[in-house]
Length: 64
Image (cartoon, rainbow, N blue to C red; front, side, top):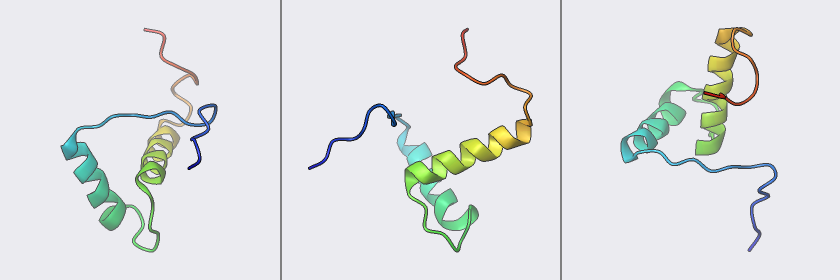
């Protein structure tokens, strides 16, 4: 058993509905030619949204 490298990864919790919706998105919408893991699908969606913002948001954590 290998431990996750906590210097590279964090964990998030989502509702059951969001989890199920993510499965639908990754299987049918994102790229039918790729079989993405759930974490890869989240990364893909975040990067896609971030690219659409086109630099309008400062990098880093929200300090509010």
